[in-house]
Image (cartoon, one colour):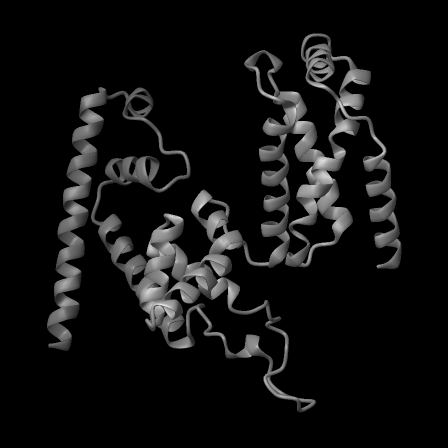
Length: 292
């Protein structure tokens, strides 16, 4: 941690000593990079505005991320801004770059704030970075009016103030309410306390369901076997080649093999299916009548 702080201070001192660019010099450097991919011009432009990147990064220290990482992300945002900047639009580079720097740092903070993805939409970002501030402001204003806001009213006003759906406010409130916990943590301080993961419901099939499924599958296979036995050898072959193999054959290929027209093969297939359906219905009816 001490080393991180030392690196942070070194980078800050170096950035503060960098040159200050006037508008004309800034434009010349931006044009040299855009039109000629002049690496020296890019390096000079980035160094001149690294103090801006560090300043933006410092605003996000309260979220717990290491300052050096924040500066690195801010620097990446600065480079993206330099790559996309159009000097012909008459805007200063600092005005354009600050958006890219802030966006890069915000994305980093949200990615690393929790192991669970907090969100990436514009409304979720707005809530993550502004909800507590807006909530405190609304509570102060309500207190000044002698008004007491319940939780629902407060969430509704936060949503209105920031301009996001109420559901997003409720979701973000839950995410910001606590930190991550390991499912392997014990539920008590005892040495052999049960882990939280042991309390999760098992979604896999239970023994009773597995037995029932196996019984039904075996019964269906028996019914299909009886239905197939009722077919002629040619009908059975057509059904097998059309429905019971991984890559079903076409009517045309079967017709060429059997010396039949494509239409005749289709008729035999339809006839076979009708026979099988009748057999399956009869067998299922017999089972139903047996148990009634």
